[in-house]
Image 1 (cartoon, one colour):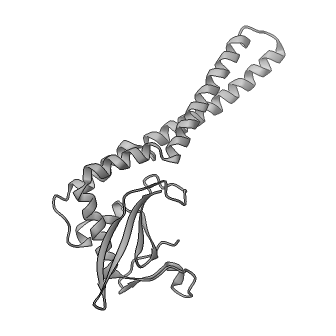
Image 2: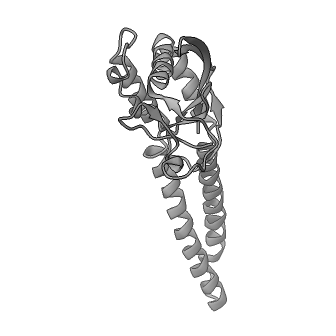
Image 3: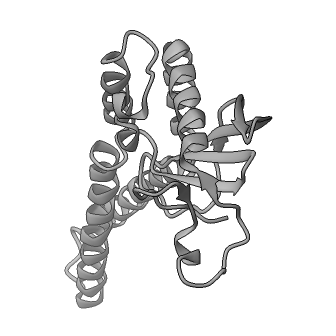
Amino acid sequence: MSCFFMAEQEILVCFSNKVNKKCDNDALFIETFDEMLISQINNILKHKDEFLNSLRKALLIHPAIIDLNSRLQQAQEKLDEYDAKLRNLMSSSDDLDKLVRDEIISLKNETELDLLKSKNALLTTHNISSVIKKIKALLNTHKVPIESITDFSFRDLFTKVIVHDRDHIEFVINAFQSPYQKSVYSFPSIETEYIIRKTKHKAQSVINLY
């Protein structure tokens, strides 16, 4: 897999192939790509509510969200454990107990910081409501199908595009800028007909959440 770059040229190629052929994925005519992109955008606009609902559900079970919630729960459980130990040690004047108490307080402070980081992530970089609100606002600016890719800010929706071959294209949404290198949810693929040298072709394109 390799994402391609867009330039003011007639053909889109993988960036790694600018000098030497390193990527096996096909080059693609810009006009063909435009048709597939327009088809995907218009399909989203036509089924906007369904798309947003599916996206919201997928984000709720995204590995990054599950991981943050898990870290949040683990941190809270540790804090409860530390508080219980501190209550037992608080009245002791034994020097060893004091050392243990100081160590627990230090660990508690570190855990509180971890908990705060997870909470902040869920409120900022991994805020599902914020992601949905942004995309909904983008889609709501279009009441009718688009006719040109210049009619829609597709870079505000798609993070990148992967051309597996001329007839199989993947549009990627990476709402959390996640490091995951594989899809965690796929929207239904659509078929787009295009013509090259008077010959009809059909391409499958899919939107994947990373």
